[in-house]
Image 1 (tube, rainbow, N blue to C red):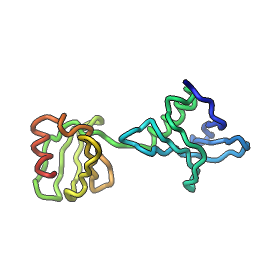
Image 2: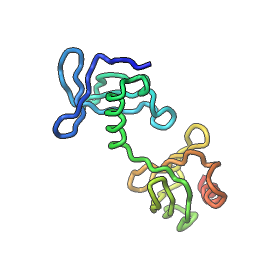
Image 3: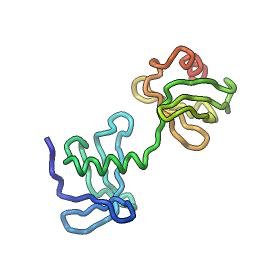
Image 4: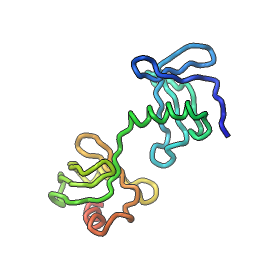
Length: 156
């Protein structure tokens, strides 16, 4: 079931998302996920540059296709969270250490400053922050290969 919201979204000539409410006032808008990992397609706020909520989207799937595609493309351009598929190597089991990992976006190296930069998420997921502030997601730590699990267990 697709709901027609009482607002419009479009891109301006500079590529910014513009929200036009029922009052006719146009404002720049940014979509923000309420639950980016646990429920990425549910609970999305459209906020102005000052963080004030303009609209709330319960579920992306309920929006008309053109509106949904605009929001999804804006979210994709703002969010960068590679998913670790395999831990190839670590420089040391003491921190800071350099990890070589295979992600869904290719192989890379990250520097883990401390064990506290590995956050447990609901279920078997983990979030790893590197020294540059990039967040790496491990969707299922039990689904990793044996070598990767052994390395990860040393840090958990």
